[in-house]
Length: 218
Image 1 (cartoon, rainbow, N blue to C red):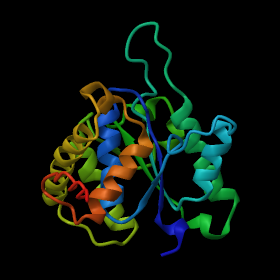
Image 2 (cartoon, helix red, strand yellow; image 1 turned 180 degrees about the vertical axis):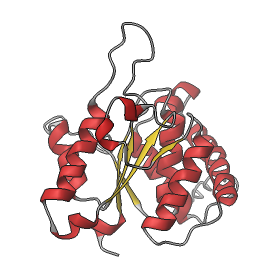
Image 3 (cartoon, rainbow, N blue to C red; image 1 turned 180 degrees about the horizontal axis):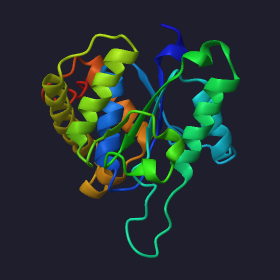
């Protein structure tokens, strides 16, 4: 499969509250054999964020846009425009670049159904999926969408949820064994999560973490 056809651009909040959903979405994409692309996948201070996002969008046939942080959570808080802005860039990429980009596919997520359509009426005809802030619903939605749009094989939703629980337990034990504290585990960067999922998949999706054997000293 061509790299463009495997890439899934993920445009979502990167705050602490959204982390469980982001981890679940990344896991689902990778377990189904596709490659998540995120602005946080690399830390190059010399690269502007907007240029990075534009590059990732152009390289990805599939995109997941979560708009659930576009409404202020409390009085006096500014709502965030980054996510709808990046959705607009992605839509423009599909419309104006032509070629393979005409086949780009979008999944738009929200916390509550119909809520964002009141603020951005231009997408009122789009099929927006609501996850209610629940990572299990997010896994089901992303799994079903990729199964349909990418035309790939996928385990059933319940089986995929079971794999995710297994991975999280394995991942936690692995990081503890490598000297991470609980606080470290809560704050580890995106690229380390991607690395851990790749290792877990390459090892055959083990049900428990086994500490590597130390080499014998002669």
